[in-house]
Length: 528
Image (cartoon, rainbow, N blue to C red; front, side, top):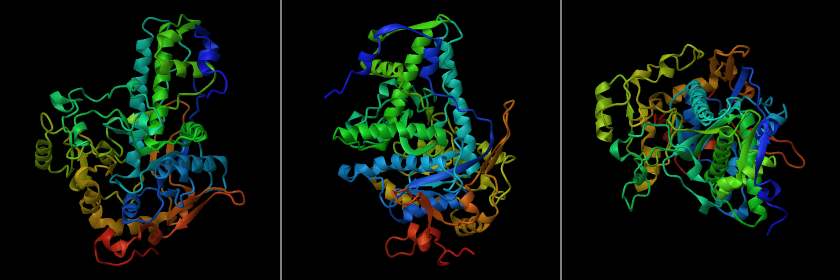
């Protein structure tokens, strides 16, 4: 049933558009003057579990801000959508807390649009490097993406005037990647993967069989092993509060439209991918307009576009926004998925070059090891406040490293499920983490030191007129030494962050959580 004219009916099917119209097609730029910012960690979780405990404690041990749990009581679930409702709630709950933080100062002092938010899956992600490394890599990935986009814009300008009024988009949101582009339209969302850019990683990354699906009929994960990731896995979403708010509002509008029609969405990943796919089609159309720019106007003709791009172009001409600054971690540098990379990584000490060579050979890496040196962020800590990890000899501790990418990621996403790997690794790999022998000591020390707030990272400015950037934990952590639960506003009470004790986060079943977590036989965790 249609309720009025379609976008194609409202916008002329061909014509010319001038400078002012083209400028209005893009997002309003957000001025970044540098200064002080906060980093916040969010985890969607609805019940206590030892796996939630491990995710949280890996963050605590490394000095991350204490996470805030979202959808703890299932407030954002769509009961009529059954199991899928909790998946969609992941994005809706993140939008709710971001809007509350940006809209008022009563909730933990509020937030700024340039503060960083990190959403990570709560039950299968472990951090292994400090927050300073994650922040540095976020900025580096954005810079690399901005350069790629700029080159694409330049290629489109080759046969046109050079003053096209739409500047190349800039990236401010990063999502982790997947090798298989799933789920697709059957999820209720349509990501339009055909319009997504190719991976920028080397075309021979996995040897001669790179990007070829293996003929493994009964192994739906490993058959994608040799594919360079170019689609999203929503295990980690990281970006500025302002950019995430716009993106998540777009997702919410799609959820509401589907709900009104009586249908369901069953994948937060596919929903976000649909927003990315529309963004990529919008960028494609902008580059096409750029090729016809004559200094005053561009020509367009819907008949030359695919049906799906025609819809995007028509909606853009009627004022709909499609550019959100979303990009992917193609490099596996943040918290990559391990599904379809089941045997590609290993725990390696960088001081042991022989072990690196042997592990690379065993994994089948072409032409020998692709990394032999410690990640530069760990060797150059000049911009990081001297803290509890300053005495760690990083070259002497085992760090999980993807041997094909030649990268030691900030964390590990244990979504490798085939042959029962997920529960097995969540239990057996915990003792492989470098911090495990020091876990109680590190957790205790970080929680006891929360009264003395230290910056997470100082980033010198390289732009004229822009102040240095300093990242801090949220203000609440100066006096609250616990994880908090976000409780959304209701008709009779405002939103709030409520502390939850460690038993409430960790204890499920008969085995005391501290026995399984620490494995040292020293009993409960005591924080003075």
